Length: 97
Image (cartoon, rainbow, N blue to C red; front, top):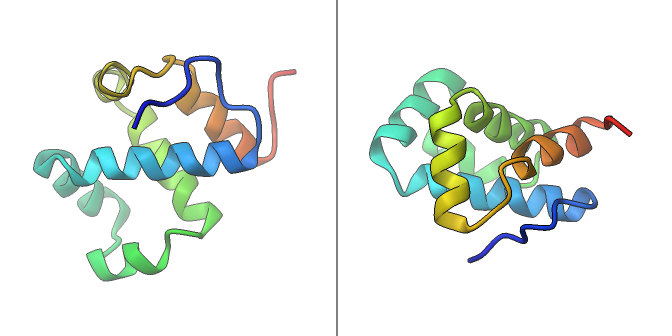
């Protein structure tokens, strides 16, 4: 799936991007192990949290916590580098504008 380069414009797009980022994390065993260790979430809890806004914010925070991961994700998904940050701001209920 290609993520739009234009930017994330609303909550639905922010949630969708967080789920695409989770897919990216799940596809990489090193990232997955680090995510599970840092979040304290179990794989079974993860499945039931897919629609939880706080969980999705945590997914975005995890990716944003490592610049190399952000760059890797954005390169693989052909996404603008600012998209994860914008999605995080939207889901948290604030923006720069």
